[in-house]
Length: 118
Image 1 (tube, rainbow, N blue to C red):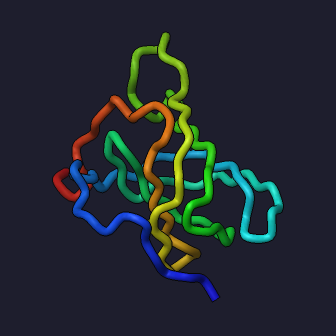
Image 2: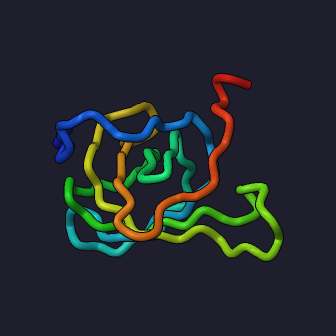
Image 3: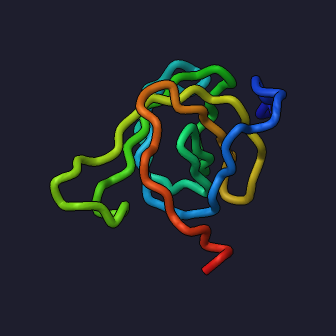
């Protein structure tokens, strides 16, 4: 059974935007097995993201995150966005687990209009 918990109890300082972007997540699952998964974020802000995964990860786990440049509607000279993140929230969701990460590496500098506002 997946533990539904959070490390962060205070309110977020940044509003997350509902935007679905392809992303690649790598790390170790609860058993210590290395994984890489192509998924998509459910929401995003400068300091973190939430995404669906089929892997069981633990609160406090460190993950590598990459969002392809082509999906960011950015200048062609910009590289993919790559950062590290720490799992701060896990919840059961249709299709897997919804994992919230706080970026511990570079922060996301591009912003998008929310899909719910489109």
